[in-house]
Image (spheres, rainbow, N blue to C red):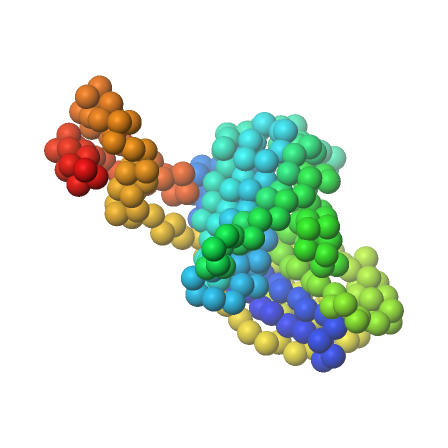
Length: 292
């Protein structure tokens, strides 16, 4: 079972969220039949989005992340609720780019180094919070680090990893986000930086069986800390026929009448889970009549 753990050091100068997301990313891979590099890109984004989802307070809060680079994968979209339950997709799940050194997946080449990372937080206010920052590498973790520093003025270190097996399934996935509070001492910062510089890649640690609790112990080695909460997380779409019907209504009466006249039916596919919803001629007529 995938989960996220939140902890702080004893003086509340550092907070850290560590996640195991292997099952979540595998579910996304199966849903979208992604190539290994698309699995890695989507998996890293889903992991970060899930962690950031758990940073929100209210049950109705919603977070949407869009990464739009100039690479062949197109857009990566991920949505989380405050429980860290996510859904997401990539525009081109069939993307293929040459491997890097030692057979490593080249996520940056798939995503592209130019573009933007956009964060939309719907916190139940009149207007959602929208933060945006340009991509720095297309590797995703570095892009989130830059986003936090510039758009939220929050010094952070972000690590995200997905290890894809020879059969294309997800062998290990997870990540962490560690953030400094404004009055963190130089001593604490130095300890943290030293720990981060010595760490193995996050996907390697998870592949070796390290848990989110183990990862927190590595990142905060030498510091006293408290584990505050644990969230079970997963990949799950919340689409329904009712929601799809509402989406059809937003097309407007004229457009729906054209569809009815030309096709006599409609098929709507959910981007997030590929579920197909069929609407017959009679059902379309009913929707149009109810709009009037």
